[in-house]
Structures are given as C-alpha cells and as structure tokens.
Length: 212
Image (cartoon, rainbow, N blue to C red):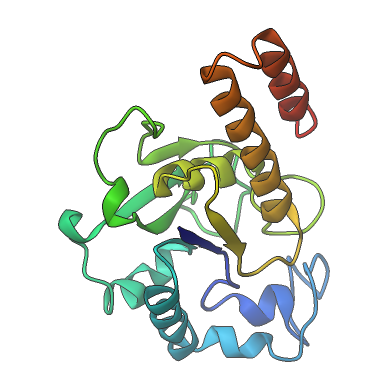
C-alpha cells in the first residue's frame, strides 16, 4: 500500500516560522527555516488542495495540524468510522509556554486508515488514538519526536512492504523515524517466524536507543 505522512506548515503560522519576515519566537529569532513560498501555507486553499492530493493518491495518510486549523480541514473531510477517518490526539505534557493564559498541550492529527486495515488482526498492531509524548527540544522547530511518527504509522496499519512518503521532509526527523520503524517491523516479522530469536530483540533495542 501507499501511505503518506503530511506535516505541512501550520495554517496561520507558516510565515511566522518559515517565511521571510517571520518573527519566530520573537524579533525574528528561532525561525525553523526561511522559504519565499511559505506564505502559501497561510492560505486555507493550500491545505484543502493538500487534502485532495492525499485522497486521490494514497491508500492511507496522516495530516499534522494545529487545533486552530481543525475546522478548515473538517469542512472538506467527512469524519465517519466507516470511511476510515479518525481524529487522534497528541498530548504534550511539557509543551512550551506562550502568551496565552490557557496553555496549549495538545495537537490533533487526522488519519485515513486504509479500508483493509480498520479491523483487528494478528498482523497489525493495536494502538490508541491518543499519544503522550513531549515535543523535541533541540534542532528544527516543529519537528516531530520519533514516538509521534511510530504512532501514526501504527494508526495507518503499516505493514512490511508498504511505501511511506514523508511529504514535508524539512527536518528529516520523520523520514529517519520511518526508516527506524521499518527496520523494527522487519525484525519483528523475522522473529515471529522463529528465525531471528534473541538476536532480533537485541538489534531492535539498539535501533530504538539511537533516538533516545
């Protein structure tokens, strides 16, 4: 199957964090990157076009977004368990403080689960629609922690042999986490077949520790 993880510049925050003249976390400092076309992602039409692309070209997909843009996405996405659309919650216990009196400790993700992978089966990992994980504190602003990428792959029902596209690969963290997950999945499959044994478990542990 063809799966996609889309983590675009968040609606209303694109120029701030990625565009020319953006303020970052204040006075132009802390910008993640600088792109002349970042302003396009502050237009709701760009996000709706992204949805149409995902719907047309992928069997399963995930979109990262802020709570403030949830209404834009849901205006064109029908949320119905029968069509595989799910809303997940990423809860961030130690989210950065802001100028708001009410702290923002969660972000939604919209998931399209492939039709063949909605039900329980021994070949797919059972998972929850809530992830508790802290955001990255170093490196590219807005990059997702490895736990986030592994969680959304579980939500989509990834299986060995699936193609996974990282549609916005700015920091490289999602692409790296996908490769780690794929290696673990192959090792787990081999272990389940009774070939790798303890060696598979040891190697899986080593791969996991590289991201800690």
